[in-house]
Image (cartoon, rainbow, N blue to C red; front, side, top):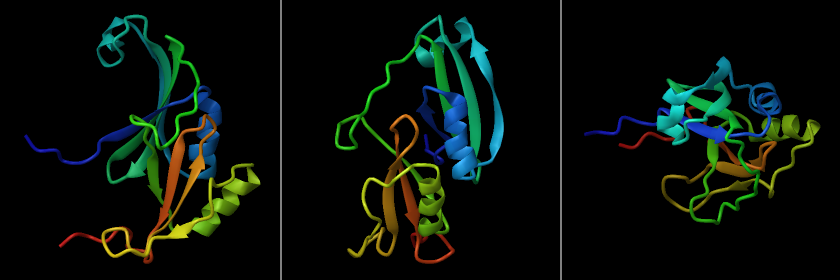
Length: 156
């Protein structure tokens, strides 16, 4: 068995349209499709035969997707999870200009959790500028700008 890469990242949201305004409208991720699903055939992934949800698939590039899920049944409970809590996570999105991304987000009322930092320690992340922002439901989104237009350096 060999893992070939990330297929998709999924984020549960409370309002699909509001989240699309953030991810598609502000961050510019192309929408590939959206819809609503329900029924017992979906009980496999969710473990609940009453599953009903709205979804949107956004293109992250190179065949990878960001899947947004608004659960209608069973209805989830919103909560804030710190990036420090075991089991929490974040979505890391590469941007060509961190300053431009932060300006666009600021005009819509989204502020970074801290000032952007440049990672200077030697190693894989050296030279990257990073910052955390919250999506409309509080999910952590890390914006990453690499020092060249080539993106993340390729391992030799």
